[in-house]
Length: 106
Image (cartoon, rainbow, N blue to C red; front, side):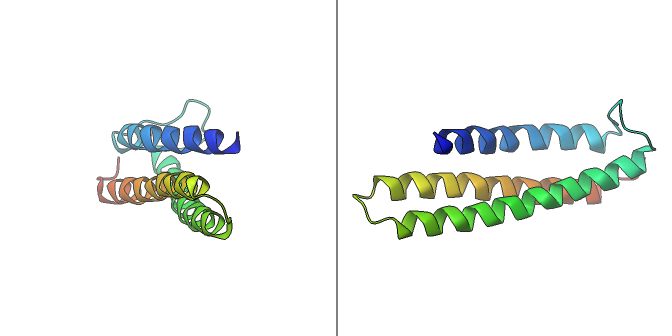
């Protein structure tokens, strides 16, 4: 059950992060955010840094957990796939952060 939740969450982050980054690059600010667009961009960049670390840590943890379980190998395959999805979250965060950094200030 936890594996399904991890798969859904990682796929959601991989899909939503570039969409949100495109909005932020164009100058979009959340309506509830109290501040100017440059402050929002800085806080969004911090959030992307958290996604990078989250992806890296979960990738390593999933690989370790997969190799530590002595079984028939199906658990290893599931853990490696989930680990690769979390690595995708980290890569997406890294690419999105670079887009934020390269975008002109609004």
